[in-house]
Length: 218
Image (cartoon, rainbow, N blue to C red; front, side, top):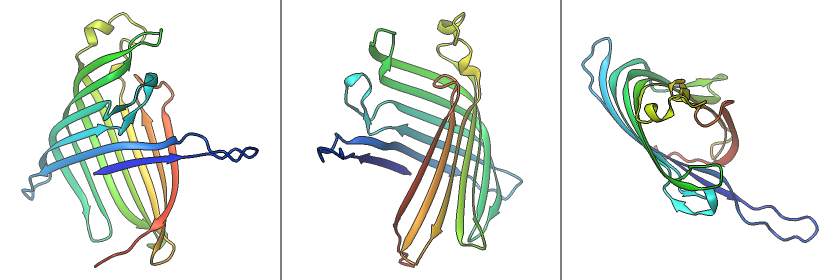
């Protein structure tokens, strides 16, 4: 489960007035997986995932939980590491995604409306956590590749410039480095690389540096 929401305000150097809050992070990512372990070379799994945002301000509107993406997957999984300080698991299977957007730009005149898409394809996912730098830093990385094979809009998009963009592989690669400066203070550096040809031809990169307090009850 991942919930992120943050805002920032900038102060004018001359008037000392603060600007309206600007959104710095907004993400909802909930996932549940059922892994059936039968002590073979691989294990079957089924999973469900929900992705959305707390607020959607496109077009001057203010919608909650929009857009929404539901993903159901099934396939096989392989555990390479399963230790106290490090783990690595990879999975491969078939996924079905449904995107529901109530505030989608439908024309060049600034109009927004409903846009629902259903697609299905192959998904490869790898998650790894391991200590590095003599156990002083914890590395966590997650890579997801998705190749769509079916799309509910394929007939409508045929002949358009972007008609085959949905066939391109989607990439989501997230990596974080966490260091405990003291027993209570920790610093986290996070990178996330996204590529979805239907959204951006060049891909998107997000970086975040944060510090916080941590305490273990065990």
